[in-house]
Image (cartoon, rainbow, N blue to C red):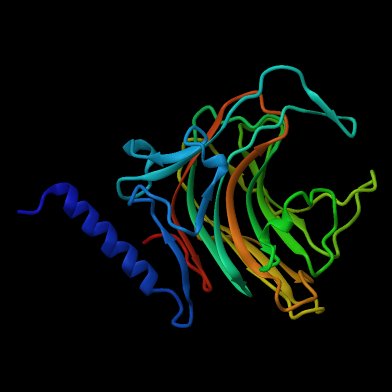
Length: 286
């Protein structure tokens, strides 16, 4: 006789298989991760390999499907603030990265997320990042804050959640993007440029959401690249005319589920589950 827990795992496996089978015939599944094995594969890297800031979760109330999800926690910073370019910082970070080198010209990243009931990023945070790195030196993308990409070194787009007045955290969905034609900030630096949905999309705590991001690279030197975002299967943004790169070798090749908070006064936790990275649209589980 098959036990209930095994039946549940079989049912979830069948559901996932049916979901992936429904992808466009030409689509390639790059990564399919439900965290059920309790171990991270070679594609994955976690922040300082620190289980306090990121680890597998088995409490049912924090699992979207199956028996496990993955928890990401950024811890509050105590002590004095640091002053950087006239701004106060109490920086704290955590992330889980997936690498898929050398990369793809069109990439869709689908994941489920739930924010803890007390999640509060305060003044703001950077959330889920998607990088195009040089395949011969992918770490060269690091430390590029405030610098405009050249078209040959990197591009980055981040799906951010921004605090809004009179609204509980985590707040409003927006893209925060670095690319060669980005606009310069008044302080002379090149900070990420924001893109917003036509109608604000507000994310609440203690609810599961299905997010998906698409990045399509341009023909080198042309302005025909794209980025788009979906929430629960509804497209909320689609930006065209992007010149991400000037060389063919620069492709999207990393997804990072992060939680960088520049002024962190509270412990902040969220959970991810059912991550699929593909060359075609994935959509919510059915």
